[in-house]
Image (cartoon, rainbow, N blue to C red; front, side, top):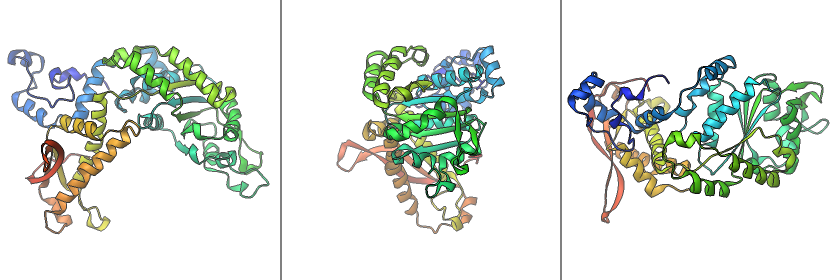
Length: 423
């Protein structure tokens, strides 16, 4: 967000999966371009420059800067924080770019109706993550709704008077009432599982942005024109997979990918939605935003994201009273890119997407760390927080079955006094 990734020698992050080594630049050249990057600093970077940091440097190197007019409009409509989105989610540059364009265009033209975005693509590929980031970056409330549970429109909006329970409203009804006239995000997951009855009940509010609070028996009209609706689905997954493999999969360059036009694909998806959801609802969609498969490198970065989350969790202080016991430890990943790639190669399931990688990190690293932690023997006390961290090495080793079979190992390896930084 402003700093140039080239402040760090490029060969330490351009192939971000590889653990960095000391720069290959000639000493004189390095001194002239990166005078701060002494041998000592380079050695420290090789130890601490993790896969996520290297990935964000790569993204920053190819991310186009917003033009002054774009920045002006974003500031005027309080959308500036959303310019951080390329550095908030892994992969999906097209989806992030299209979402940002929709938000900017909708606000700049003072559209007096809700923005309705339809995120479609395979499970575990960032749809919920991007929708959640809209709320977080814009600092607005967000409501998640599991559409698989909505069998009738009363489940979505609540019962109508004089039916029993009409005074209680519903989660969505009460959320809209609490944020009438305000910007907020409503995320409806697995929208294709809604019934025709439920879809019909949404037409008016998605079109005109007005709705009557059912707790007032129609006496109070709500202004929902500022609501950002995000509907997620897997509709059109096959055609998107085909489009990806035929036109996008070979485009390794990030910037080339985000410039690529998908107008034809969006038109095909609109026809699929028209047949699957009906014309009235399809016409109310502001944009259809496809989510494509991750690249192999992105898979590894996602796996490392879960590894790094675990790394931060076990560094936290022990708190016996709150039963936070398996902590005050330092997970040392011996070649983070290689380990993350191993997790992907062995445990990734396309049907589950990122969820399969989260599960693999939990079973293959977290469980093994816990086992190694408990083997240390000493009773766990809060006083251990004043001692050096226990170090646990995570690496790829041979299975007992033979050298041709590999597995992840987590082993205690002494202690280390590490400078404590804010988590």
